[in-house]
View 1 (cartoon, helix red, strand yellow):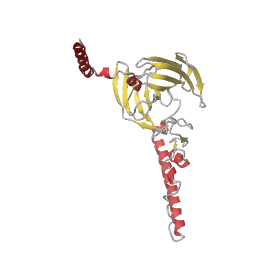
View 2 (cartoon, rainbow, N blue to C red):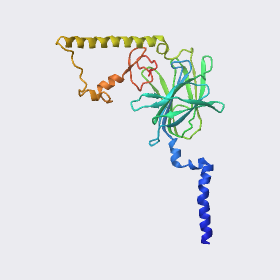
View 3 (cartoon, rainbow, N blue to C red):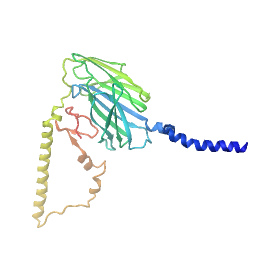
View 4 (tube, helix red, strand yellow):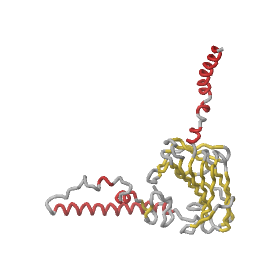
Length: 305
């Protein structure tokens, strides 16, 4: 009897590795592995006719704590969308652009995948579901291939739009300083690949976007930045020239200090010198633009990285 039990135990021990080899999914179905693909929070901004006659979509969020990166991350977006940029968000809020791959999924969706370098992710794209005529309507599919603990969806009402409605009804509506209204929805514990639909309808007499981006995307924006660089270069040459001239009047050129206490502060995030070095300016109006800003607070143009 003891020999029979021992023989059965040996057979089970030998068969288990073989079963795992034949079925790799059996080895990857642990609770830990399912947690790796879970998203802690995600925000989806839906902006119809913002800086383009199409609809602008902005995704951003973060993985659950403890998830190992870099790792492959995937979005599901409407078929025919034009991706503007995608990637990770760094510690200072900077966008870390990534090379992404796309493939059709079913009849209406596209799968977008890339290597996520940090736990924080983002993606922006345009697509055109809007109907022709004064009355506009579209239905947006809210779906993720990963489980999402908390999903926030915000729909921006275009300027000059009337009779603006959403289905389901928004949880709340807030207005910003520029007159934009945002209709907000919250979805808790969204399972993987479970699709929710947000329907939007409104009336608008024109197809003119709420904010013009012609200057930011065209030659004018580039010329403005070029002028800023030229002026900065002239000022820099003038300062250096004055330093050399002042030093030569004393019989020598003033030395350049390389070991001052200020030198070690350049990489510090809290240093005023570092914040000035990281500051960006709008290429359309010249207003300061923070690294975390998607659009200029002065004129509404898209912030360029």
